[in-house]
Length: 510
Image 1 (tube, rainbow, N blue to C red):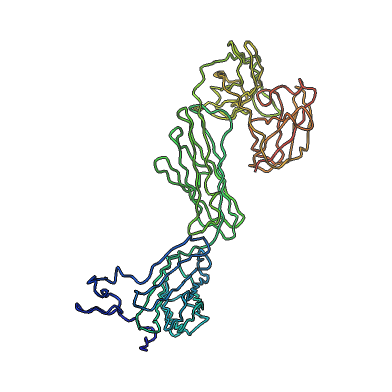
Image 2: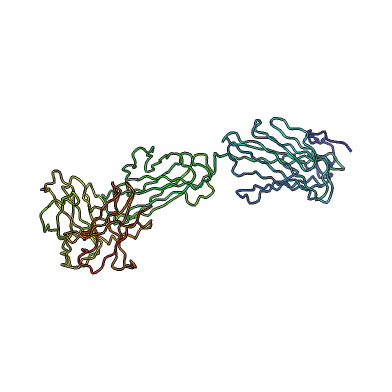
């Protein structure tokens, strides 16, 4: 029996024009005068089944032409780990099984490596490793009995994040003929720097939104590891009803392309988190969707379901239901808070009940302490309670003024809107250190806090907090022992002195 030199690849025989030899590849069958070009009479077929994240399968069925000895091979290969990781060993495993009923001989496997400098070791469970050069491993399996398998393992080091292409070919010589049956498979993997499960959250205001409102959306990025996440990138698609304002803090690197903001953050170690605020302005009424997505440079993320956050944004049309606002006290300085204060009465002059309203202050050059937002540069507070026809509610509004003097240009404007009761936030409960009544029948809470943190005060009429309501705005303290004073509307729905019982708790938001 003619033998095939190790590593040699025999060329198919070219048929003679008058030949009727049906034993060669690329021949014509006797009496049919029909040519079979080698490119079409391919002696094998490759079938690709489902490819999982951890195992890649190629089923290769090898079959000769009818007059050539029949041989079926099942070749499976996989790459471990998937994905390949920079500066770690990558293992290519090839398992070849003779699935025919006939013993086979002269099997040779040639594997071309993706990176000639990365080869470490090679082994086989049958035959010998005849060649292990810088860029190629040649395995002489030899004979392979029916039902027998041979396993080849090749280890190399992933030295860069450039795509790595590995290629192996299988050659076999039948027992009765020197015809060659060949199978070729190529695999490409791109090494990553590490595996990092990064996630993103997107939170925005809960109150009614009107055109002109300035909105702050909190974006949080986390890395659950196990490896550091390099240069996390957040892409935010801003819908047509909103316009971009800025990012806070201002040292975050970003670019704005059309309506997409792409922010690049600093590296995140395993278990770390980072956040920033996206400042937008509502421009037109409608329902829109704010989309934020997260990725990390050259990192593989095993959990992709937390890489995107979508938030629905509803912008209501401007209200035409104006309410009457009457100041019922002079502006006076409060030494407890360091702010000017004024009592105002809001009256519903309409014929129908309203479920809430907002009151804006014009002429205030500094902070309105009860404000939950800003509309066209005017700070506004909200009252989420109902007002029937002809009913009124008294509010205490406070603001800073230069020289602690009354502001002569101060003007209030109140408009009806839907109820803006905020949901009870989740977080860590903080035990107040002080609770005391003040002379004006207001109730003071003092609690330990982290400077720059976010805190909410929740109140209820019973100790079980079954009717709990959250006060707004939230508290962002600039001291470790901030004070919050319940002076009634708009901070709470009613004055504390008008309630038989009122219970409070403080929640630190995450």
